[in-house]
Image 1 (tube, rainbow, N blue to C red):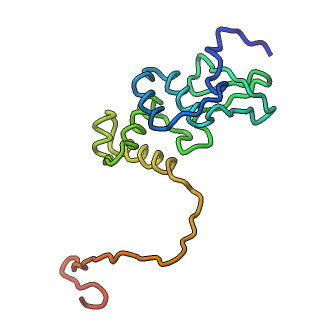
Image 2: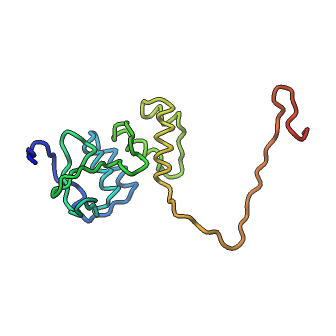
Image 3: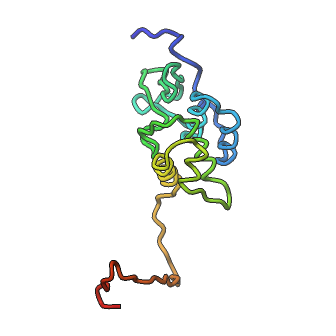
Length: 173
């Protein structure tokens, strides 16, 4: 298969064995990722942390495609791998720069952000901001189950039943 060199941008950032701190990488991403390619490289490094390997042939080197910012191509077999494929951001159509800005806003220590505030910051609709926040929060979670041991204390949750449209709820409270 014939490939021109102009179709490739540069060698993948996953070739280094450097491990990045997530918050530091997101701060770096906000300051340096002003285009889709830089944002894709930051997400590539966060996802693979220098240990990328082609799923088809196991080769360790890849190339960032020039015309497709989210795709990296294996240097040996030519298989294309998406930065967002297989993650919570799969099929996310927002620009990766906005995704990184949203992630940086969500991981601020001690502060949470609502979908409405996220929509204001990113310049998108509230529905898009809610969906992106939901995707990113689910991606941040550790999905390994934790088995509780010892004494487990649950805090009481109070609630009040209000009649709807003049009718009493079941039980007649």
